[in-house]
Image (tube, rainbow, N blue to C red; front, side, top):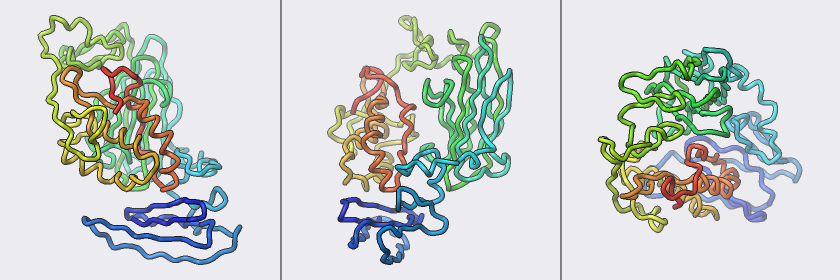
Length: 380
């Protein structure tokens, strides 16, 4: 972890990993460079060069992007869908980068796929398909091929499906990565949005999928499925299990005399030091949202965020991280994800600081429950 401190404006840049950071132009004639290592894994280190320049002569290397009168970005950060420059120039004129994917889809059926499929998709992709069908119909999306970068948490290359007209509204039907086929997904109305994101790392063969419009009136569910009032089919074993699987919660209504076992969970005390002192002290594993087996694995994954402890906004970030990695467990209420407001507050307070450290905001707050009800989500 290399930390460059520019004393004149009290600004620090911290770098780690195996990707060389971009050129750093300072506003001072004095700079401190600090190398810090812990007692675990050691890498091959780094080498760097410096040179003195006159004020107003700031520049970047040939492949880097210059913005904000002196800030340098790696190519991977240009046209990635996230503004990294205050002047927003890194996200301008980006139409050429994603010209071969995404777009509007209408009609009773259609097809969509990652760029170049079945060949490996290009790096740095942001593809969004907007699917619309006629009134009185819902949309069923089925994947026939699926192979994206494998990862514990889908944050690098992934497909995300929204039950709405765009990515900023409605519920998320799922985020998928790796090589396991996503299940068939059905919208609750006439709109669905599919987003494909790829970073600069590993590229796989991608995916293809088909969608079709299904009449709500004429739709039937299989013998092992339950029909929601919206026309969506869910698995029979999801009835009265404590989770709202239908958009309108129809699968959890009239469950007083149900023969299905009530939802129960085995709570355990939080032992991860970073996550002690929250508004709750009980959690439960396995973590079904992030596929974390136990607290030991959670502690290992959280260790990567300890480098951010010096940030002034670390406390709201810590509450969000712990709420996601060690979710609240209540013997009465089951397992609760953090509320969306916890994520939004942390993003508002921390995204700019992370941006200065070349960290992009790692979470999609829209995946979390939009509620303040302590029975629906937690406020760590």
